[in-house]
Length: 378
Image 1 (cartoon, rainbow, N blue to C red):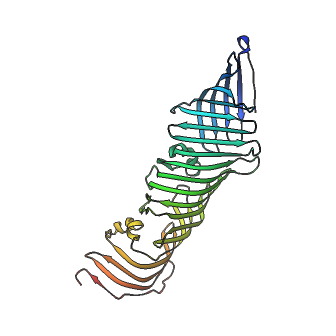
Image 2 (spheres, rainbow, N blue to C red):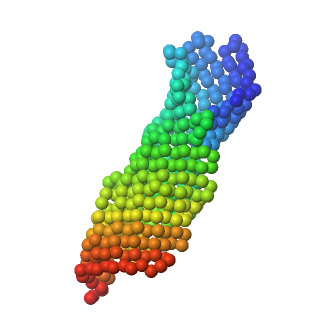
Image 3 (cartoon, helix red, strand yellow):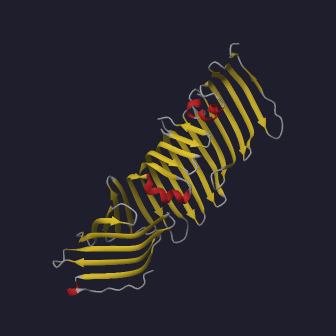
């Protein structure tokens, strides 16, 4: 919607000005737009100045104030135009914006130092916008993260990838593509959820319609640390497969599909129900390990430390199925195969075999056996 547009030629008709009350697109709305074009006497190029009092992209979570861009406007020799110049917004450092307006395409590159965001659009697919990321600080994507996770904050890291933003006339907003991250850090104000030094390569598909969202992730993590409440995870340098689907609503998040594959060390699948603040309401998890030796360091250091068992070691195999709710553990079915458990100077159990079962609602039979062991000095 364009309103109150006026073109006022200055002396010798070499300066054109336009005042635009409002510009609405599928992605963003611009308000209080002022455009000024000063054209050179020889007709080869001009100077374009653009100001916008407000730029809002609510679906992506971005808002800018007092946006200003000035650049030399030139013909590209094929019926289009090019403009490259400094871009400034209130409260932010200056950047550089380059725009190519072709007869059937539009390309823009926003850069600061080595970081680049490229945007590509074609007349043949007006609902789609391609975004290319190169060494982009994760903080630049904070607004997008806040749309899916209000308390999440990027603390470090850079992003690379190619995403496509679909904004159809009818249908949900959709962002899909590939994304890679280096040295990624995330935390929350209360410190209960955090990550540091993460490496990430994933394909993602995010859809948002009204107050409901769906996120599908299929990728790998490598290196770094994760903290969720008392649970601490130290990721290996080798890739760990992470695949999940998450459905968000005002009532919280439902994760009906989750898969974690860390080689032979840990394979886990499950489903989770989370409150809006991330608190666990319910979960069903099935996990197995054919190589338990790395488990204490990578996944169990938090709980073990709470029991004074930080030096505990494992060897052998185990599998478990767990049910949890807001009150804690509701059910457990665990099996052990030749599992040796050692807590130096405290105890050791050699080659445990059998099954341990637990239910909060009723007693269940369990049976385990072991080949030998040690209890303190015995």
